[in-house]
Length: 223
Image (cartoon, rainbow, N blue to C red; front, top):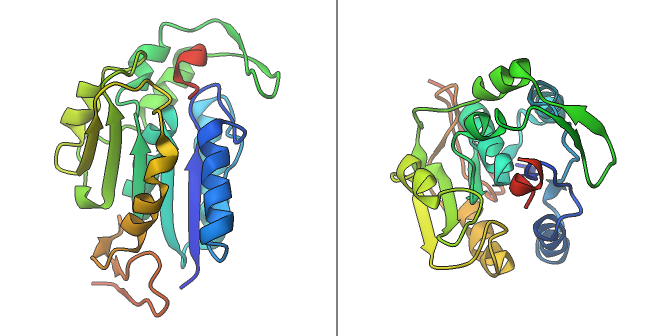
């Protein structure tokens, strides 16, 4: 089964961030047959959701994986719960709509130069992507560092308590030394275990060649 991994960057970040570049380099060197998508996501939540939905539309029969940092971790949780597969979350935002509601002002995307302004509609769009109850949390791996200066790591620690959880002392919101985990992240995608999609169908895990499917903020969140 062909494989797609989508990397979702954080708020005010881009595919040119250090973690996105490290991820791209690792996959090119060690998993060249895996299609890795590192899109520049729209600034507005509803547009980002629509963009990701269009991106995934041609890959419904592929084995999916998601990697998301900060706000991208929030989006990756929604993606995994919606499309199945597995996700690795890096210092994920748990309730970004609460944090970003304080930043309803004109902002500039530092990588693209786009000028945009969030309003209540955008906050509502973001809240609509929340996942209060996690289905099959064993298909999520959350990486946290206690030195995160932007988000309280304990919020994610509680939300993902039944998922695979790694909590490192120190570090910061960018997750210092993320590249150390790329090998184990890929192994997580390729572990032999049941992966259940949002439709209740069960697929063979990411990386299995003969797979079968059985049916029945500003810069604060950028890293």
